[in-house]
Image (cartoon, rainbow, N blue to C red; front, top):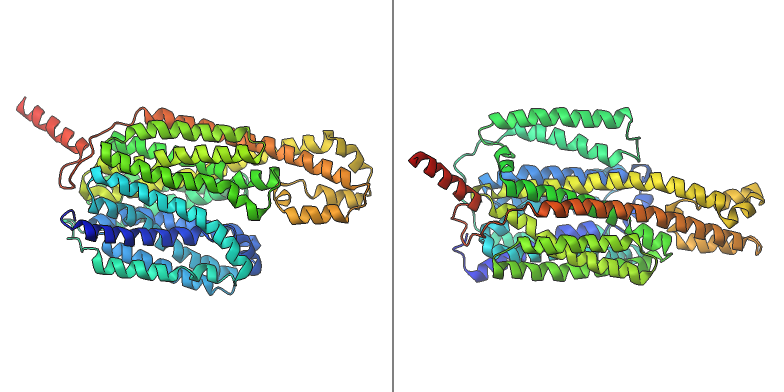
Length: 540
């Protein structure tokens, strides 16, 4: 596709980014409104499924479509992904009960996974690695922009419109993206081999599904050592062993295992896994700190975390331009990951809004510098015919890292919170006063000894106002003690995330920097080195 005019490439990229924005903002716009939507549908007992189903279907679709798009071209999958996402979004908005909502969210997830996989790979079709960096940076910026606009817009819409419109308002953007890609995106020639690895696809799916479910449910729905979690993990391990055996025999494997013999691919994917492990696992609890510890209302909490996304958007766009200009990528990872570590280290000591904003800015800068690097490095390290498969592997490792990180950090938080709350409720100045109150009043007050209740600022104010004047100071002291306990707990969570990111930084030193190719027709640097070595051995 390098023969296309720059004007046509630019138009196609606008269409691809419109598709990415359509999928990303439909995800972020619901983040603040989802609890209320599920409450309206009377399905709070199935709330985790509304999140898990999207994660499951999008992850599976991302991995399976990667190799298929290498075989049949990106265009049919891009169009299918946009269409499925539009259908899923429309149907989700028509849901009458939570079961319909979950099913339709699953359809959305499939569409999102296909878009996510093929959009990043399509950039590789349109541009050689040397030019690809600036577009990777802009694609990352699209995600950042959606995380800035989505939650705030979602909160506004859920307060002023019927909840169905959250899923319908951006459908015209999907239509525009679909029409542009249909008209402008060139049709690719079918690859030499068209045999589909059905068996590998099956066992890859049966490996991912129980693994994601195990880490999604561990510590919340079931104990880590429960039969359900151990059974899911055992099923995942058995399926993984069968999958590996199947792939060694397959003519056209869905996830070619030889890719992982390439050190750039393996190291980049490990870094992506570890970074998402630490990043998602810690960032998911930022709102607990902003609202629960600092006592900021949900309306204004988004403004505290917004600087991270804004800085990330700018940094990722600039990083992409510099990579394209300099032809080097490792230096940006060497700078970005330590800055991310610094940002998360500041979170350990957060005690005010200015410090929280500073940590967000530093972390966003590191994220913008580092994140575009690893997708580009993996794509540059393999031949163009395997672009889809290697991009899918990158997305898979990042998704797994984020899911496992959230589960592990959740366990770290719950274990430490129990200990700190116990100390707060037994040794605080308010403890003795609470013990002397009427049992019913005491029970009403101690109901706030959990982070979710602390985040409900209107309820806190309402409860305090309803108490007798002599009890109100005790209530304030108790809440302050619980806030301190939550703050100490979250410091431990952020410290764990910092340590995990240090491991990612160590791995960056092992990332081999290969020259960025200036044409998609040239062999991958790693492949060229291998061919040269083989010829040398033949001569000898």
